[in-house]
Amino acid sequence: MQLAKLNFEDTFDFKIKTDKDKFFIYDLVRKSWLHLTPEEWVRQHWIHYFHLKKGKNLSSLILEKKIELHGTTKRIDLLVTEKTQPKILVECKAPQIKLTEKTFEQTARYNSIVGAEEIILSNGLQHIFARFSDNKYEFYIP
Image 1 (tube, rainbow, N blue to C red):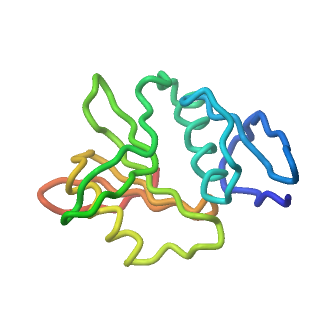
Image 2: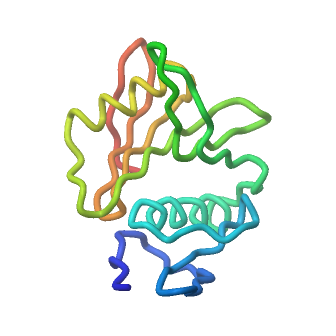
């Protein structure tokens, strides 16, 4: 399996294994092996980034939480919390998925339920950062 080189300043030491021609990556938060999809590759980079570079406790990282939006169940990719309060909502896409206004609006809709102060939309190659204040999103470069 050819894994895309993602746009992160640091490289992380991932645990990856194969079983019957499938690749798996060890998830630090869930403490289990997950099927290594392109989207999971991006999510695992963000998990390692927040835990190892930003010093977030693994317990403050919430993965694939179910939310209800307009009567349908959705799952958010990653939520970073502080003292159980939502701080950063991260929506991960596979590297080949273009980040567009439509994908940003999807993330903003999810955040209308979650209520995080910031959102990050990432395909691992491109990252879009926005803060929510005064009832609107303001884009920024960290």
